[in-house]
Each structure stands twice: as structure tokens, then as C-alpha cells.
Length: 164
Image 1 (cartoon, rainbow, N blue to C red):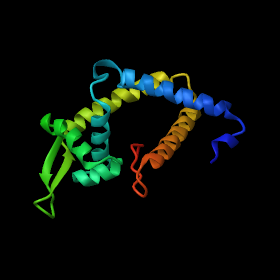
Image 2 (image 1 turned 90 degrees about the horizontal axis):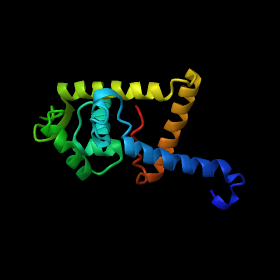
Image 3 (image 1 turned 90 degrees about the vertical axis):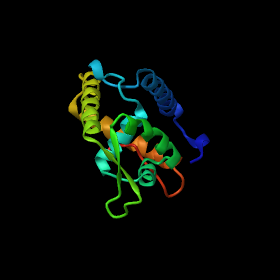
Image 4 (image 1 turned 135 degrees about the vertical axis):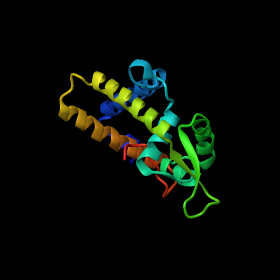
């Protein structure tokens, strides 16, 4: 699309500004959650644990592909999760030489705790919203994230961190 042909740039100007403000505030607060769990898990750890929970055990390459990032980044990000016992490295059931990453019981417990805290934060931030407004916002934000992910992903390899 030719950006000069956009007739009404007002909403687009507002959108780009609000996305920038959101990104800054999300980074400042980490949008962690509430209570003692607040800010207790960084974004990379949360997204990796969430992906393993949703998709099950998988190798580094598969995890990287499903998240739209490179294998070296996953390896670097998963190392502290293994060290702290949130993720287990196990042998692949069909190929004992291959390593599979899997959420440990401790990792599942921490993920559940962080999700509950973040869910509470979302409830507080949107407490005066109608249920339809929450649903509409989720639909539009997911659509926006999917479009952004598709644009940023290498051709044919669109990974997404949107909920499964």
C-alpha cells in the first residue's frame, strides 16, 4: 500500500503513537502481574514456557521455528530455565541422540502462578470494560500481533507469540 495515498492519517497517527506508548510502558513495568509474582518472570522465559506448555515437548529447532526466532537465541534463553529446573532436557523418545525440551512440574507450577498474576492485572486494568470490549480488544490485538509477526518473519516462516 502506498502510504501517501492514505486519506485519513489521523487514526494511523494515533495508532502509531499509542503503540509506542504501550511498548514503553510494557517494557517499564514488564506487565508482570500483581502481588509477589509481579515482574518475577522475564518476557523471554514466559514466552518459552508458554510455548512448551501449549505445544508439548520439542527440540530447540522446532521451538525456535514455532516462535519465529533463531535456534541460538532459544539455546541462550532456555539455558537459565534448565539451570533453575523450570525446563527439563530429555532424550527424544524415537531418537535417543536428540534432545527434547519439556516443561518440568516446577516450570508448570511457576507458569500457572505467573499466568494467574498476569490475569489478575488484566482484570484490574480492564475492570470497567464491558465483556464485549475485552473480547473485541483481544481479537484486534491478536490480529495486529499476527500481522506484525507475519511482516517481520522470514518468508514462509511466520512464527507468532500470540496465544494458541
